[in-house]
Length: 328
Image (cartoon, rainbow, N blue to C red):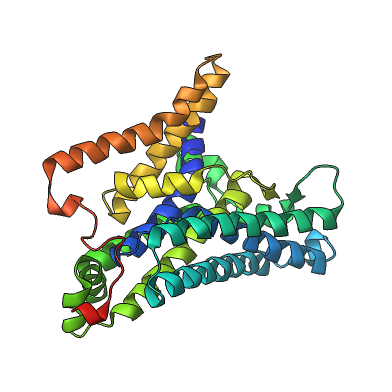
């Protein structure tokens, strides 16, 4: 059971990153369906940075600096995914393009971009397998506390994860506090609810939309990096990311647009996804049905929240709508 829970947490962390980033973006009134592509770009950007650094060190572990081995992929992932968010912002905020179409196009573009660079790296390593192995970098990312193994089940359950797992929880809590307790969060929520009123109150609507989208995209991109370095043990394969990005978007609805609720939701989604593997191990032949569980739970939550009609459980009023200042 401890192993099952740990696996569920590991599966849920990329979704938590994606959901936290999307919540921040949606609070500004923008529905970014490009999150799957952004997470994909965040992953390949980190992989590329790690690959270049490992080759610069001659693929010798002793020549690699642990701090740089983590920092370089981390910064590459943040920059790559933030640039994707900047592209989305330019089209939807400045050019006022349709948000749904732009997001879907960004997902297609991001996956294609990731596969292109991934295939290029695979050709460079000249491997028999269609993948890139960054085991050395992955080991630095997954370094555990030295006394974790001495604490039995407690150490395995709470102290055995990579630092990106703990960082995802910290970011979600900080985002929740900022959105609900600070003036910046109040202004951002005002922009998402009624940008015309926020503009009239002196809030720079464009600035908040750009920052929320780019910061949210950078956070989502870290989910892709965590998937490769922790879940896949540093191995990159094209089209192996699965539907983590789409599940992150579903998690936003499940969490009722609250980052702290996304923490529990992500780990629940991870447990439901892991149920498929668990059922397969038990010889259950209908494990495909288990893959539907996260989406079924999301639909149930959506139905109940819609029936209750509480304002705090609803998305921002201006979500998905472009703001035209001239119409104020």
